[in-house]
Length: 80
Image 1 (tube, one colour):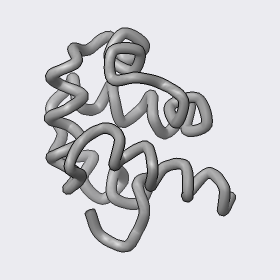
Image 2 (cartoon, one colour):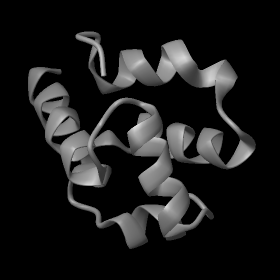
Image 3 (cartoon, helix red, strand yellow):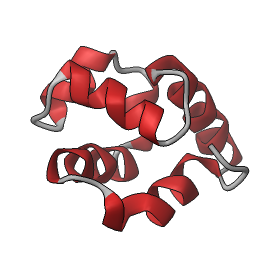
C-alpha cells in the first residue's frame, strides 16, 4: 500500500477492480468506522462477497491481510 491511505489506494485502483472487489471497496468507503470492528466474514457478508474475496482484495491493495488493512483504516478514521 502506498502512503495515500486506505481510501486513497481504493480510489486509485477502483477502475481495475473486479465487480466483487468493487462491492467491498464501496462498502469500506461508506462504512469506514464499522469496518474497523468487523471480521473478514462480517465484511464478506455485508458486501455480499466471500471471505476469500475479502482476503484477496486486501492483498491486491498491498496489505498482508485484512487485519493490516483494518489497522491502517483505523488510523485514517482517527485522523478524520
